[in-house]
Image (tube, rainbow, N blue to C red):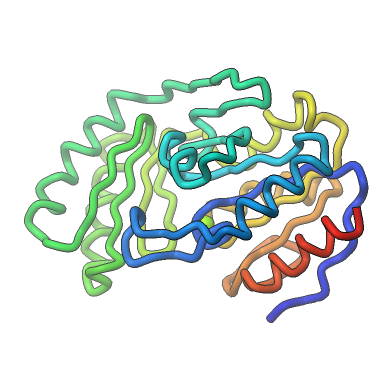
Length: 243
Ligand SMILES: [Mg+2]
């Protein structure tokens, strides 16, 4: 499945999704493991590309920081509603806090009544994970659709064994645009690497800007290149070696 990934411009900016891209997906989100070569490659890319390396994820900021420590990168967390720029400044979009709280309250009974469902409350979004109860996919989908019908300021982001609810107007594509408006990302060719439906917003933005979009693993995509995680890291080490 690995296509030959191209050489990258010297003036590139790297944007990485976290789950399924930097780390392999685990049975529960807290169980992912960061392999040592992941930190190694992030450090090397950050040096080679003048700090223009960021993580763009649906995860909360402190969770990503915890997994990647001691490496601390610019991060767009919760799909971009919380973004830490290269100077360490936080940009927070409070979004529609009341709707997110209402959605959480509405979904709590479902999660409580069904062992194995995991309802994750983040600062400005929520995630209903059903990886351990795949037979409840349709039930979960119906529940989040009901919630959005009641709270039209929210949208559903379907992911791998998860439905996320977040305020409209916040997505990974906008997060990439925000980084590209600032040093050290500004003026660089964006490269976005991701594996899931939520990454499609970023692929679209990167394609429009003449950048490089890389989809990890299978699934329909707008990305121009495709690889698996093994191929991804082989490519990244090649990029670093050629620098
Ligand atoms: Mg992912």
